Length: 234
Image 1: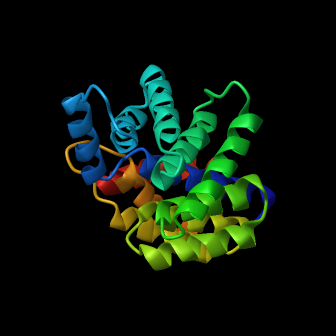
Image 2 (image 1 turned 45 degrees about the vertical axis):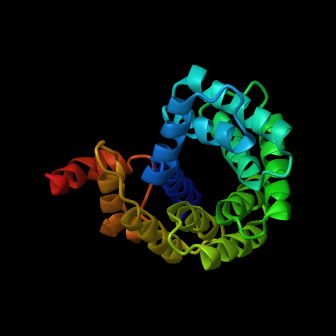
């Protein structure tokens, strides 16, 4: 693959990551919506974390920032809440991804600190491990170390679509195009969302596209292949 096609391939994988992350598992959303509905006057750290999750996934900047505040308060109430550390790290990564961070470097550094703390608090938290792997591989440029953390996450929870997706990115950074695609396919096929339309079926077709699998990807890929890929879905 050329540098251009490699960058394009990473971009497609990043789009898949974005899609999977912002289509939350139904159970977490239901728990979060119930926590919002309860409106307990004195919410616990866990309650605040659950309330934040639906706000993160609505992709509204005001609500998104409110979610960050709730997660910060959750950590103030219980500094040992490993899951809240992981979710707040996730929040910071997508704060940068959405272009909403005032200082992207500060936000990414905070994500790294939060994921490291989450893993220390709960070494069995698969989400925290895979997020730590993403920070290590993508932000710190240590793809091999990142891949090892993703493998630990998948050993704990082989059904975590986010871990398959982020481990695919790690393999892409390492130049293992075929394995990156295989992991992205698993991520897309294992993730089920009901009641809303997503781009998951389209991205799944991209992963099976012969040109994409051959590494023949550049900035004109969608112009060449987009219409045919959409037609396959109808």
